[in-house]
Length: 215
Image (tube, rainbow, N blue to C red; front, top):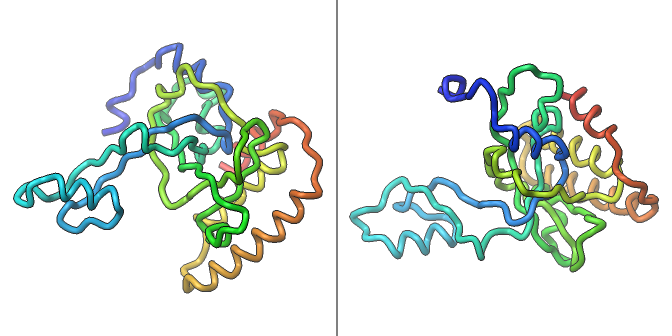
């Protein structure tokens, strides 16, 4: 189904827009949407939608969070080589995945959760930023047109560490949740200590190479 819907050549604007983006970079105000069953709402937005719809119409539904309630930023979790598809004669990856980025207080217990990953965007003001990896939204690459990538880390090492964390998180064994919570909290504190001692050189194309080597 996906293969049949691909055009032989994508719009030039989309190809050009995707080129500067890398895994671990941010985009502003990404859409936030998901599917749910209104008969059994879990998240607050789902509950509100369910209340606004007659009970007789409850069932599977598509929920698109209003623009003014979207996260301020989203972090790209797709590997860099699947973003640009550099060197591939025919493009076969029309989408990228983005996780919400939120502000988290430095003393918040959320920072010890394995699905919260602390960020250090050098160009963003405000409090402590973090990626919430509980949801990743599929976006067509056309949404990158007119957008500028924002670095989520001050250096190349931070971006590589994030990529490695995603790989470990997806490949983790099926252990009890308490083991993941303890291990991720300990790892996070060690990583925060290293980050506080690290200098901040600019990003380099090495991240693109390292990401593609992992694919």
